[in-house]
Length: 384
Ligand code: SF4
Ligand code: SF4
Image 1 (cartoon, rainbow, N blue to C red):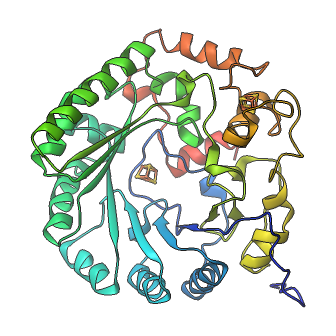
Image 2 (cartoon, protein in one colour; image 1 turned 90 degrees about the vertical axis):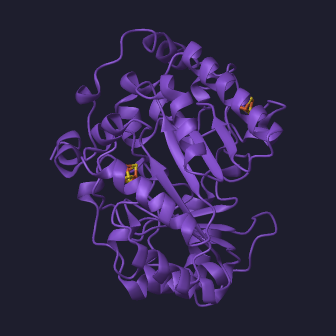
């Protein structure tokens, strides 16, 4: 039974607003990307929230001050109530984003979403090469469908926003990826090198590029960027480096419980979409309202501020800039989520990052040897 506090807790002066609400509508997805950030045990998660439950979450999020909402998954298009959820979010004043693989999208659906008020659509690709794309997605139709839908999105007046996850199996094709984006008249392209969570962490040895590969890809992207700018071309290229080659961690989620609130398909509320793996019982929107979850719950307060930090972060002059890095990465790589993110050169665990870089120098396993994200593998790697 859902517990609503007798008196709504007054927002703490030190806690910001959850400006970004990520609605992970479902873990169902027709594709099987071996770098998917969904949890390894996604097949064992509870029942999805109903339409009415999502409408409640969307309403409470807006009342708390959320300004942007992302509909993602899994593949959010498998939810037939998507136009209704988009419409309600837009009516409440959110800026609405759809993050999709493009599989299941049709001209009719784009028109329906547009009528409902959808502001922004991002389509992800696996590769510029049809064969590699379809092998990674484990679907022989995926590439053609993505191309068609990227064009259809633009034809409906939306900017074309593409996302390519970059890894060992496509990084050396960066020119072809960028050329494809230019040929498609893309407006924004995120060339996002794999971040190692969920399935990507499981497949890290097969996905982490070498430093040389990254340097080449970044140089080529910069050359294209300069050329496009000189031509007055509208396409913007964004290259995201993996933090495994940094000496300081990223300011993960701009700080724990600071801006981002994720609700997973079964209603679990998280400070970031990777946090489910931590040994913390996070609250569920079926049991508590979002105000309680954001301001009062143990999970959202666990790593807020700085008091939880052990050394070396506690006495570090950089702790207000990076917040000690990523709690999930610290947990995955050191077994303790409170530790400094091992990406940091000051972390006593930094050697695990150095070892991963060395591992990337070896021959990568073939694509077929990666562990694909599907229900069978989810149960297998979860020991069920
Ligand atoms: S990363 Fe791939 S498998 Fe995961 S949700 Fe997106 S499209 Fe589906
Ligand atoms: S020691 Fe902690 S706070 Fe300092 S730079 Fe490293 S991760 Fe950031």
